[in-house]
Amino acid sequence: MKKHVLLVIALSLGLAGCCSRSSSDSSSNKPTLERGWIGGEFKTTKRKPVAGAEQNTVYVKQVYPNTPGEQAGLKASDVVVKVNDSPVTDLKDFRALIDAAPPGSRATIQVLRSGESLDLPVTIGRESYHEWHAITLGFRLTSKLDLWPDPDFSLGALACYDRVQDRTELNSPEVVLQHQEKDSQGERGVHSSEGWNAWLVIFGANAHKRILKQEIVPADEARPVARADISRQ
Image 1: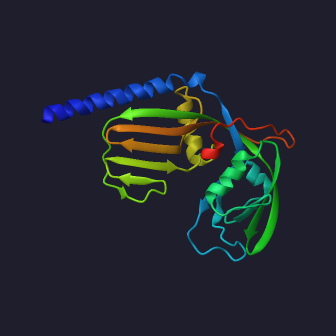
Image 2: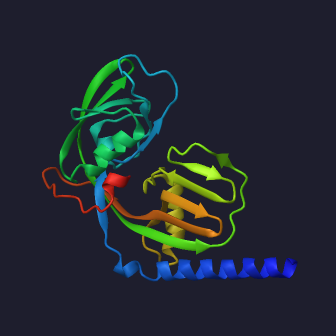
Image 3: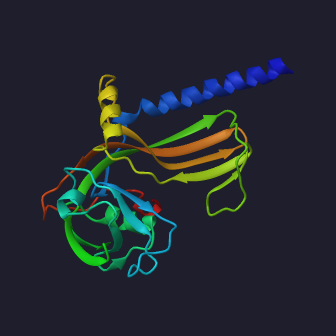
């Protein structure tokens, strides 16, 4: 019995490796997608909303140099209230508004800072990326249970679906070091876990992004972003 189990595991890992290699070999054929970008790290807090922010819970965790957000005057601990005239009630709202803005266009981000409301004009930058999809075959070892589909859920090793919303900033110290190491291997871009993972018994599928470039764009050089999945992010 043990021999049969080991044989199945070996075959599963082998097939998973084949799937991964076939995906990486097609990088030259992948379309380059774009979306709006201002840089920095933004988080959601579960604390009671700041006075004057209504139901807003999005705040600036980190601002990196040489980004549109830094040029606009965003600072750590700013609470984001609106982008142009659109209220921001969660991180998904905020990212959707920035993602959909054409690079080079102008936007106004309303923030609360030390109880004062500020309107910060920002010129939207550009993030270029590739989308990657993979199918795997194997065993998933976990005991995590999350029975409420919201839409994430987990039934232990049997089935799961989860979304990864963390963004990758090329200006962050961790990514700068990682990118220097990867450059020696000839890889293009930086892996980002942003995407989704799904699993059913021994079959898995996932999607993630590879960030190619994040750049400041001069004002009024706006053009439509080439995006295939902004509505699903």
